[in-house]
Amino acid sequence: MVQKLFGDRGKYNAKNLVEILKRDLDTSPSPHSLYKRYSITPEGVSVPLMVSGSQNDAIVDINALRGWQNYLKPEDVLWECPQGYHFFHYFHPQEVGRQVIKFWNLSALNSVSSSSPTVSQDKVKLE
Image (cartoon, rainbow, N blue to C red; front, side, top):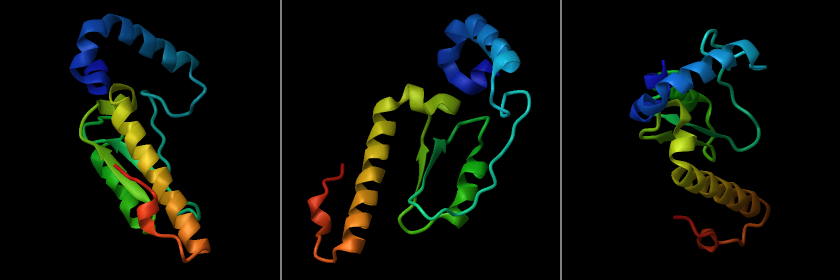
């Protein structure tokens, strides 16, 4: 399980990570755990939505992630990190940060442009 969650990075700390995961099973307040997985039914929301995950996540597989596509509005974003396993946000914080900021900028632009038709899209700089 450690390998599936952390990839090659987990092999150096596998013993410690196994102990942490064991404690998590006993003490986590979340109903979603490695022992029993719950899923959120994909459905649309009225606010801008960003759904993200890793292409090599063994917990939330790529098909579950892509299952959100049918519920996304034009302003929503589905972003797939090419790697990083279940903790892609930890292993690739800069790229995750860039994607979140890009999403926020687009959301702000859509919000402003819908309320003021004179705003130009080139005023928000995106990477």
